[in-house]
Length: 408
Image (tube, rainbow, N blue to C red):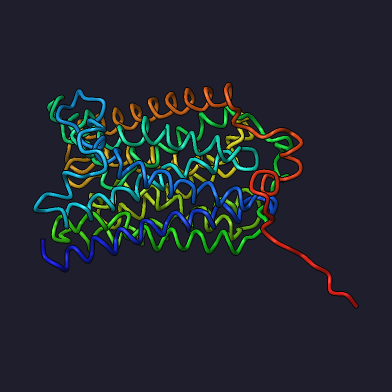
């Protein structure tokens, strides 16, 4: 592979890795001041642990020899020693590094559902277990020759389309987040308006970093394709996100009377989530429509936690599960050439539905079982007293902000 393509791969890897600190700012700004360190540490903990596990054995699990395999053999090249001795190691290692960033942010996304009430050690145990039993196998199913990747061929239908992670990342994380909200239960003061963002500029900064890094997330894989589709993917990543911001703000204005900056940031993330699986397979106009639908639908979906009573602290379910499902299923209607409304038959819609629902169910069950086991053994949730005192000082022994009055 030429040096230019390799350089693009390295830059894309850095962009996607930068998304997780961006997520830390986005989530950190949304919580109370006494929980911001805990929230940001769950993202940085995911970087450390999942990045390590991916190199040790996760990459080995992310590709299979048969569509019926659960995952690849984690011990086939432990620590990638054999890859290091290969002639193409220089190029292969960039692909491994790029893949690690997807694994990292998928796990980090889940943490937003359990803000203000989770033990850090328990979270790290969950992160390692769910990466191993959740993300690594699902990556193999979607991109590594597994059942979702081969579903169209097995059924005589078009192949499942998930360019950058609608199923493997967003539906996976959203379903796992929903499971953990059930395991950990509601915060002590789970009422509408009780938890306000402590730092709105952090929220805007985090969303901006996420959007910046998302070009590596969506366009990055084109380093393997000679950048053939880079222009379309880039434009769709801009357009869908912009339309989603407008739609979210319109819903807020109609519903609550005022458009908010937190709503604008959330709308941007919703649009990014929805375009992720579809970025390479929609014309720009259909991408704009998808963005508008995701902004409006996710703005409404985040209200479901109050109606249904699950405490999804930072709306991982409403944005990532709903947005990921929307973007994946939307392709069944509007994917270039194969979409039901664009000259194709119902086949594309069927495989998109099967893949998205299959991943959702598995991720929910796996996360629930892992989370429930942790809660019943070492405990996942902090005590009520510690929750009231603030998890930053109790769990990490730190305060995000030190205020000292000057002596007169």
